View 1: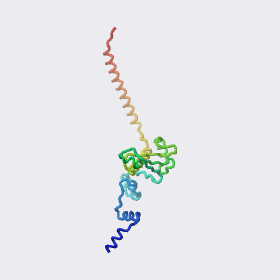
View 2: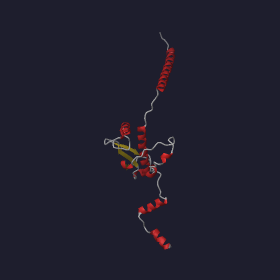
View 3: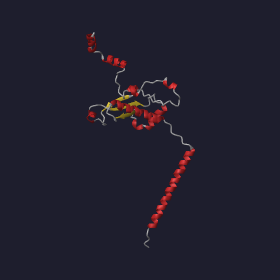
View 4: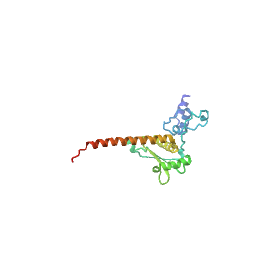
Length: 196
């Protein structure tokens, strides 16, 4: 019995079988920056039971299959490691054909972030803040999410009363500034000496 167990342990198994066995046992190691943790699977059934006040705004689901991710040498932190490992992450996607972003938001993003779009129409986001590839990729994806969120936000509508108050406040400040300037000018004029 012991010999059979020892032979079973020593027998080489395919790598995929080892990982699937670990996953089944729940002992698989996953980094805090793995894509499964950055993008947990959707659970649409959970949101039906919560009240509308308690619902948090939905985060943007970025389809990673539609993104082109490249890694290159980084000039960021890492010491001698930056000369050996490709840690800088660069994420790009064609903005006009990104159907996971609404059309109006795409047009606003094109006008807001024109300096990040190349001639081919690709929006380019890069990060070299960290020493780790996955963390830099996560930062890039978060930047894309922030860009979409900023382009989605509607400008605040200011009421007429608030506008009137702001105008009165500016006029009052200008009047006070000119009054202080006049006082200062009078003081300077009184110091002048006539040599006639």
